[in-house]
Image (tube, rainbow, N blue to C red; front, side, top):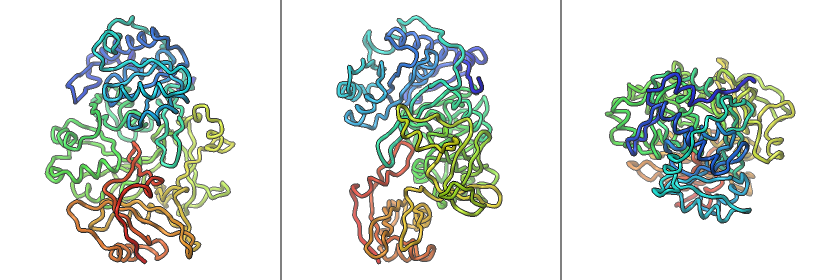
Length: 513
């Protein structure tokens, strides 16, 4: 079948057995593709001995580590379904997810073992046993792995087979599980590898959480498929990333805007040699124009991209040659992606006009786990995925994401797109980051409220100053009527601001106008 995969670790062990596949930077542990294949076989045997079979779910609650990939590949061999879970959630939030996916087994790292046990106990049904990835005893992962009989399992992984489930990060509501198939992995490999020019000698950094599509797919899994090396960090550490850049140990990097912001604020950012990293990619949320300029000043062209959990995720990526010229663009649809921009009646709009972005192609999810209602709502009857994003295409075929359809508000009869206002506020000398929402207003229906993070080396601007700055760049109806200062924003794992939580987030505020 089109989109079928062959056992990735077995093939890589055959092709490049002695090359290093993964390195844990926290422990210094490194394993070759031969060792990854051997440990994956034993992990499959471990799961089978625990009663896991085809179609069964396996929960994974851990920080970034080599064992995650062993278990991900082991599930593929068995035909089981891996379910990476959000370790930032407390047991009360995890329990409904466990009840939804009903895992046969749950594996957890030391930091999250107590949370796993509590969540498993709270979940409806019989719960599930928990294996500690760091437990030293005979029932710990390493001991069970050593005792397990290696299992070859399936050589061919069917394209339409379910490999894993990813619960959406929930910027607006309750998470639902996006189904990931083997074909989606193959399509994403094609899309991102040709866009980035991924090579077999490349080293990439896996630091975004592995319960998020970017953690798995940008660029860890494609790098393992091509035979490169994945450096694994438990989480983001700006100083450690700066060290890796200085050492020239990275060739391709994907990060979210919050990471690029933190790196730019690091004391060594202005002096570290950035030239040895070949490709800088960004997604998860719009990268402010002012931050793009900051990196250009250091000779770095950050390539904005855009995708969704539901698109595998790679859909758009800016080409480096025109990144400086087309600041704000997410580039063009990649090789195995097709898109439309449509009006509210589903009719294609001309270049330059805004509309909702729809996706097509072989890399789309087939839907949501046990949610036919949500699947039907996300897709048109003829199979186009409604993104909920508002976009436009310019005369050169480059796309710009204007904002989310659900975030747009109407002030005095005029449409206001928060992303446009946020981009302007980010250019203010004292503003580090901005998030804008619409709030009710008795006169205008809705008006903007801007939540701000200030630069650590700046001053506190007045609301009048901020309003005047916005008015110099925006029509009056787009200028926020109130401003709130926050120390930090509530975020998803992808770095997106959870705007539905902003009003209850602590901060200081004052109004203007």
